[in-house]
Image (cartoon, rainbow, N blue to C red; front, side, top):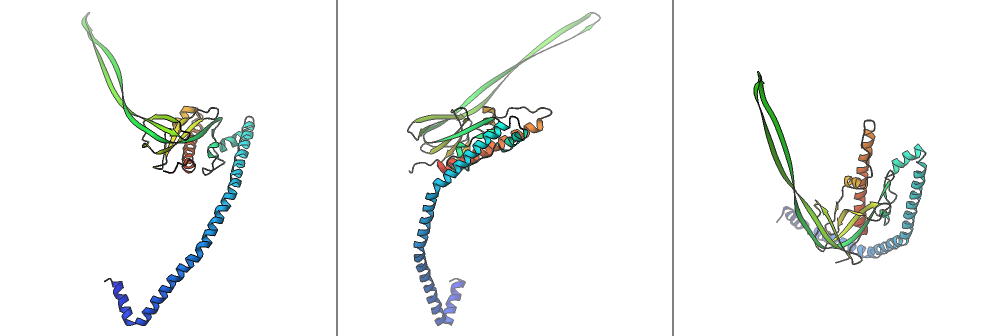
Length: 295
């Protein structure tokens, strides 16, 4: 018997009548709590239903407001871009606000808001599909280098002497291994597509659902795979780093010189940070909106 049980037993023995009244009071309190919960249930249910109905009624309004804000911001950026051609203040404002996002990842049209850097613009889109097959294979690459050196030596003394020479050749062979990841996905329309990339630690299994994120310049429609969200593991991983995206699409290729080194490096750093931030927000968006069928 615990110390607490021993104390309760002694209290009952000391005053049985008081203990009985306390037990009755506790029992009545439990009954009242159950009764109150039963009475509250219909009220809570009604409140929940009213809240849900309100949300359903206002969803179109919220969507319309988000679309209007997006279109207004788009028109403002177009005007600012035109003014920036001859107005330094407008150009400074354009550069300051070029990474601004009008909508949040929770909005359905989040991917419609492009990523802008100076006069470049990238767009993103996402497709969801189920993994049919996935394979990784290692490839070993060999390289060789060859060097050749020669040296001469000798002496001359009083018109007599000797000359000599030597030659030395060497070859160096090195190797490195890359991992190629190839996988097949069945998309929502029933079609199948194969994707692949190199040197990646992205994990997936047959049967899992993935959302594939693609990036492309605004003036084209062909995108490159840049990120993958695994709906089973909740893992979101980049296939292309911000630096790789910048190199592939030439967003900022200016090289720092003696006079502009600080400005160029600051601009490039800001670009890398904002690209990384946008990819992270896209991951939040696809996790919310790219739902997969129930098993």
